[in-house]
Image 1 (tube, rainbow, N blue to C red):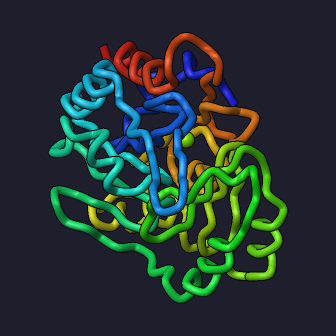
Image 2 (cartoon, rainbow, N blue to C red; image 1 turned 135 degrees about the vertical axis):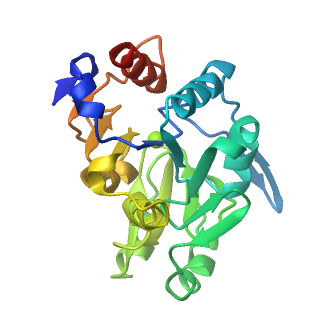
Length: 250
Ligand SMILES: [Mg+2]
């Protein structure tokens, strides 16, 4: 892996689409959620104006921008409201993509998740914070690992549970990954692997970063890429990436 400063103009020659993860890339990590009975309190993260401008700039430079996140569509639409006409939103770990008001569903997880959902709902733990509203995957926020959740998922051979230090993402193995969503999107946009650059920072970016021409990790401790941007620093990794791209294109 090379530091992002070594990304050169020649690396960009085939790149047509830039795939951006959200948490840890465009906003700092961390979701605030609280669930008491039937009342869920969930904070909508605000994307800084600087990041919105970066998306506009990349778009002006001719790149197609795809946002690829584990979050739900309602949340991504709210976060990217100002640039909705410039981006496509691939959500819930590749389950579907919203593009200009149309939804392309990539995965149908219903039959795999319908029976496990009530079981997970019955888990009682002081470390469980709440279920994030999602349509195709199950996301459970916890203060720390909850063995009971892991044991329930372990019994289902088709399902994964990815723990990322703040939540479990539970979904269908090999099916509900950001890479599966990207591959479907590449068909829609008629693009090849070499045309894609992606940046991500977490375990749910693992497959995504293996399926693109140029992969950038924003957390070397969790995922690998061709280039890396250190997790710690005053700037978000989206800042550093955009800066580097603009500096070599100038
Ligand atoms: Mg992330």
